[in-house]
Image (tube, rainbow, N blue to C red; front, side, top):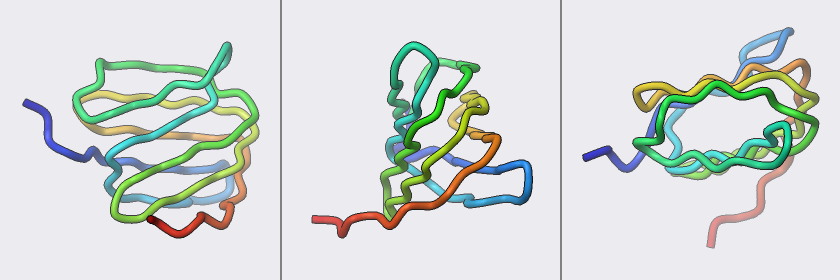
Length: 92
């Protein structure tokens, strides 16, 4: 049975942006958005322009300009061409 979180690393061409645990990740995949949860099947996807939303103890939102995401064994890497962290709303 999968845990409640998975490891996420977000990097851009210029620098690492964030590393931590998430319970959910939403990414702008080519052809439509995808949501990843703990225990998701292995995947490698191309990203389009849009928002990456990470939910967990901390909530992080990034506006991204393409790239790719990979998910395997409860580890996700999101590598983007460029990104800007957006101010996240307060958790309710």
